Length: 174
Figure 1 (cartoon, rainbow, N blue to C red):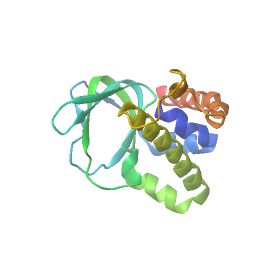
Figure 2 (figure 1 turned 180 degrees about the vertical axis):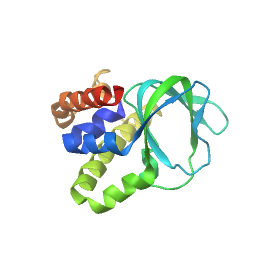
Figure 3 (figure 1 turned 120 degrees about the vertical axis):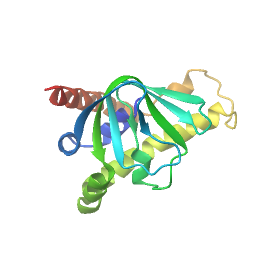
Figure 4 (figure 1 turned 90 degrees about the vertical axis):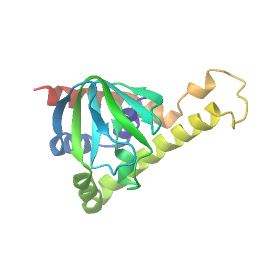
């Protein structure tokens, strides 16, 4: 599931408008490295269109990301150097927001911070659950489709998150 649906599902319309206003819409050509391996991340990127590839330090592709994904957000929680690189694999349009601008907003607006960090926790819990199962450490699941099911809280916010992302796309298109 796209990160933006986790994040925007917990935020308000005003939060999403703030993100759109705080960032800059950029076009990036295929082959451009957005985030270098073992570097400090200075921006958070919302992928509006195009495709990104996540690579290990040794150059192995580990994930392909499409519209609705977010990269660089972990730097807001942990400023350690990256363990992967992010490269544009198909010309992309992104919303780029300076990490410092988001950190300032998190520091100055406690309600925004609460919503943002809660959304990040939901996303990370889902990622950890999926990683654990993929690596074979979890209990066997009787229903093979159960691992892809969303909890009720996420289902309740999914349509709102999608509508917020669509509104952001339209707003940034012009």
